[in-house]
Length: 438
Ligand code: XUL
Ligand code: CO
Image (cartoon, rainbow, N blue to C red; front, side, top):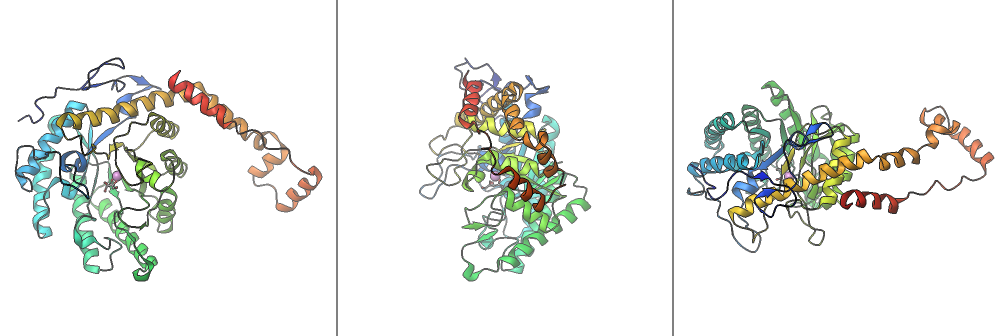
């Protein structure tokens, strides 16, 4: 039974179209740098925001009705969400979805019944996947909403809570593997602390690593060949979260020998909360061989919390796609971890949010490819470091063939170096603008 009767399949109509339910830039089969747009941009629907969240915030309850004709909190509702989700993805041409365990079923009192429900719903999802060709990008366990996780999951002070978290991870891995998911995410929602006065940071971090190691061992034992991901975030809900940013998460993974099995899932709004640009965390991940997947959204610099907006900032999307193209693409995809603003509560708004996000990333892709093909940015960066390729001493430095003594003698002879050459930031920014708007 169709749920979104008022919406037909969303078509590409081009930038001049005034149809709000059409793509202006996302043209799935258009080829950019030798690959179709849809291959550059494996978009995913986030089950939680799109099918579960109705706009509740700290000050008010739902504005959007996400019952999809069923009683909320029942398995009928869980199935209605599957129907709604697959119809939604098909109408937008989205080929992947991401989920938390308790997004797809209502959580029961005990884990046995929750797991039975997960088996039942995943059978239903599998049928829909086979019918539509839609795939699972990644799965995860929600180990932050239930009150038992108030002190974290892997980082909880309670061994029983740790055990319960482990059971959830095990089942979420089972379901992810059953659905052929490409990845499995750990977002450490409450893996952090409020005050050192009650916290053993070292012990908590070691325990998180223990949980992750068990997840790798179990995942591999049941045939999961995809990537595990850490999704860094510096704060919110906790004051200090252990996976602060890409660099911190990479250090953690290496310290505990998890770096072969894990990559990072970088979320735009999390990077900006950490005081970085989105592209910074993408670059840090990429140069360490750990750029796995992206949670595509956008924050608000004036608000400063995790607003999870649909991305509309073309400049940032361009810089993101520049990093992704330079890295040779993602092994994961672009999951819209984004929600409509609270006053945007209609079915049209649900579609228009995704159309905005997909169009923004399509534009970002088009423009990033133009920047790369234009070549001036690459050329300038290459020139900027030329002294390491073109001078004797530069060559010796990068081939590790010199020493402090030799460099000191060299500097003494030189007296003082010339200025290192203009960074030409303004000129380069103008080049980007002329490519974006020229
Ligand atoms: C929260 C967040 C999560 C993760 C998955 O900020 O981004 O939804 O993406 O747990
Ligand atoms: Co996210």
